[in-house]
Amino acid sequence: MQNTFTKVVIHLSRLLLPKPKAKKVDLSGRTVIVTGASPGSLGYETARILASWGARVVATSPHKVAFMKESLQTDLRRTGADPNNISVHALDLCDPHSVDGFVTWYRETHGNSLQVLVNNAGIHKNIFTPSTQPPLTRDGFEIHWRTNYLGTFHLTHALLPLLQQGGLESGDARVVNVASHLHDRGKNKYLFEPAPRYNSWEAYGMSKLALIHHSFELQRRFSGTSKIRSVALHPGSVNTNLTQWAEPRSNFGKVVWRFSSAMSSLVLLSRPAGAQTVVHCASTSSLQGGCYYYRCDIAEVSNESMDETVSRRLWEETHAWVGSLCVTGKRA
Image (tube, rainbow, N blue to C red; front, side):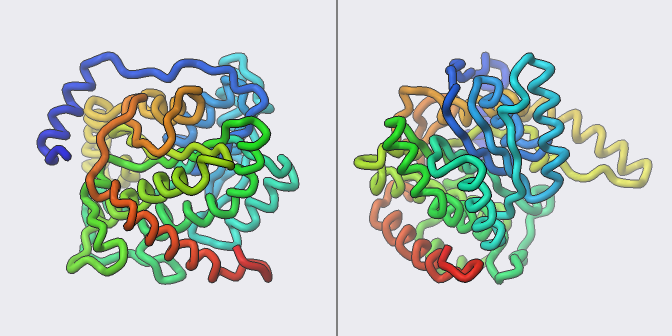
């Protein structure tokens, strides 16, 4: 894999080139769940595009879901698309009750089949000031691991019967995991034991490495009889709400904030451009399962993520953890 300097040079050079674009597909009759779709996010753009192509899109966010729905429907009206293609629901991946409640709500409102799950929701804490102390969730997990990987695995596991049904009915169900090129900062040994020191960027990379293992193992286990294709992807370095910091109150701070925001728009992809690989993986008929995508095409992945023994062990240990969760009187 490339070193950090090489990645930066390649990224900056590609900003000057034409951006890849997903080919428009008629998605009428297909239902898509897009997690992490709050305004300003990659998930928001993904949900908006897929809904404008005719899919029934269920968009999730842990908060302000009414505002998210209003924003998405307003954007769809502006482009002449059907605003009723969007429905929304709250979902907090760190809360087993929230995951269970979302799946129950989905079954009640959309039935027992699902064609596409886009696992976009995630966090990257302390981007500008990397932390050396792990921030923990209420149930005691490092926050990137709990949100980006464990929560996503839990949700996918809970929705698997619906995806299997969707695959049998349509011949094409898929799970799209939004990972990151930073997965190459992760090491397989630290998936099962603590790293000697904590760094928030490396913790983020570890969660994305685990997510790629999840993608590949899901493909191996369910692509045959269930007709489920599973992929991971890097959307590019995108100017989203993850890369933006809150506007400060002081006048000097506001000047720095505005300058930083302007510079970010020059060196990071726009959200519509960043969503293209996600949309491509969610819609193209030529999708090859068990692969890692970047710029709407199959790309190189780290050697660590190709270890099938690790993928299998990680799946089994995470599956056991999900099975240990007791939610509303039943196993999740």
